[in-house]
Image (cartoon, rainbow, N blue to C red; front, side):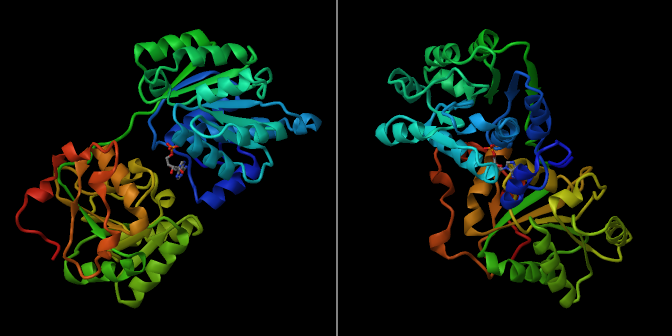
Length: 411
Ligand code: AMP
């Protein structure tokens, strides 16, 4: 499945290219067609699943398609309610990057800051408004906001919104909006009060549930190597020379990265093959069969290229780049340690990727071992402050099997 298959229009596809997104996440695959069909939906999905794009992309498309002479008017046509200002800002940023080539006007308003600049932005005209409930009602009361023309209302993180006591505000905002609007409710969990709210606001809704695949096979030894980005290639060669044996799948985020690594490995006399989206089907099949026949023991791939192909029972998986979607990590390393066999999952993490590791550890509820004795360590000042992150649960996570072992294989 590609974004093109989801019938997204060119300006949005162009925006996605700049974001480097190649394939839709599961929640995007399921949600986008229903939003485009103007259905009301309840989506059970957590942050980290790609849920923002799941509503942002189709909303941008619906509004872009209907752009006409009235476009320069002051009609707000989509409203996204967020419980916190941090989330509101994040949503605005996402809308701006996905909608970069649409010319739609996107604005965010939230409490705790001066209201005047927000009034000014609203005066200029807005197509898509992201707001926290209190400030929205305040601006409405002062007649800076008219909700009569809202075509789509999104309640993001609805469970949190209700926990924070916004139920009456949300109901009020719903009543102030055009009654014909489409409503999309996103929530990590659907407790009774969210269900009740949904029943009172949504019409003939459909449900989408995206459960996170968070389980890692027991036999997989996971290790993180914190290292500067430019040193990753040297680290890879060092491990191949000293300890890594067997058939190895290396994941890289971009096609360019795959090609570059393949060249370096070939130059160093390793038997490497690669697959990515720019290679022909024939070239990909050839690479794959060489890997399977053991003519090559290293395969380098992007996530897209490796989807749906049968490469299992690997001795090791290397995350040369850390995936920004935590489920992708689980998916990648699920190709090793199968059927009770031992497997290795090594992750090369540069300073700018350390937040991805935090999200991964939260998802798998496990703290991953760190190798601190390789020759290409990160500068100490770039060390991740994993335990300081607010809301992180993995401190309580069970110790990994590998961490219990006295003797390590990695130095
Ligand atoms: P969210 O669940 O909306 O907070 O998104 C989680 C992260 O995934 C954000 O960093 C997004 O930028 C990123 N993301 C969303 N969709 C995709 C995609 N299709 N491919 C790669 N990254 C994505």
